[in-house]
Image 1 (cartoon, rainbow over the protein chains, first blue to last red):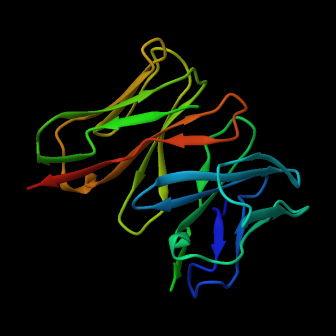
Image 2: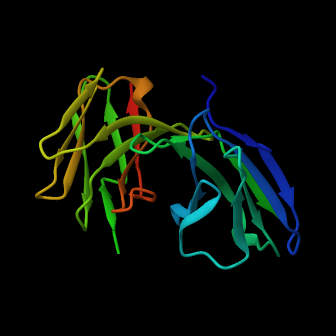
Length: 111
Length: 111
């Protein structure tokens, strides 16, 4: 079956703009998590959605938000972009007790 | 707060040699994962370890888990160049919906 897909794959924005990233899970996977990866901070958990509800949130400012739709697809939004938001954003999906499978990521560059 | 530490952070080894990567974590967890990441790529799932004493092997890689010591190891046997990558361990929280990652071990296998 098809893997996790993320769009766009690459994005360049300027400070102060906002951005929306999309994640389509593996068919049947209802949990979608988002992670940020930077050279300095490593891999950090942003939030997790299940059945359109946010179940957990990491330690990120309110500029980072997300949502999940009824078809389990998820979006995350970052408003008022800062240089430090430049990162690889990964989404991961899973069923209840399975491994989390990661998508290819969206590489965001903020200028 | 769950903390995960990996060591070493960087490992340069010659083909044919054996080595072990260590992953320590601070609080009890039901599951521990090992992932591989190639430069510029996403995370590829290698192993999920569910119980004390669990051992899993795939090719030249073998992972084990000691939940009492809160320690997992990833053992590399007779390394080959294709194993060059960054390896991450990750531990799941009690709710099962968040991974906390170690800092990663960058492995370089030289001919």
